[in-house]
Image 1 (tube, rainbow, N blue to C red):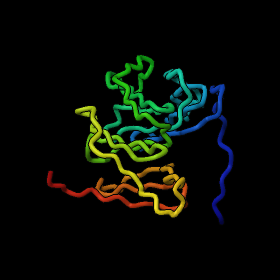
Image 2: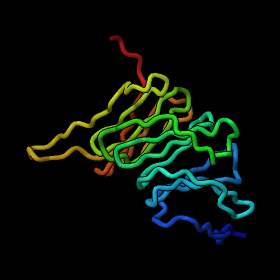
Image 3: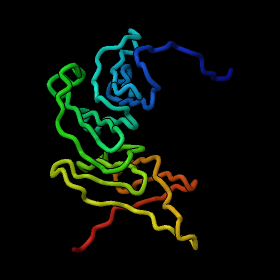
Length: 188
């Protein structure tokens, strides 16, 4: 006997390309989808129904849940929007907008640290790490360009993932490499 994949169903509601899908183990029967139509939609997989919509007004490039399960984070070109559904976790129809973080660059991917109040954004030239308590950038990781060509551009970061212990950040780049960033204790 071999395992195979079959179509379980189709979820219809977006009017633009679906750019991201996010899940969380705490709610295995629900998913979030984001689209170029500027909407984030919450779906009930048991019923196959759309439950709620948050409208960012701009095409969404990246989407993720925070580890505390109370925040949803979506990135539009240079901005990050964070919504809070804490009153009733999945009652996202209130869609209270907490604040917007501006990266200044196109955001390709997002991820929350599993053990800090950090949000990481993969932008074209760097990875920006915000401390969400202070709403400040605590680090910006830039890749050096090693080339004899004076017009050489640094590779773009296109994907991010933290290790389970939150000590290592893995980053995928347009030069076909995965760079491994380690949290270290600095002395300033």
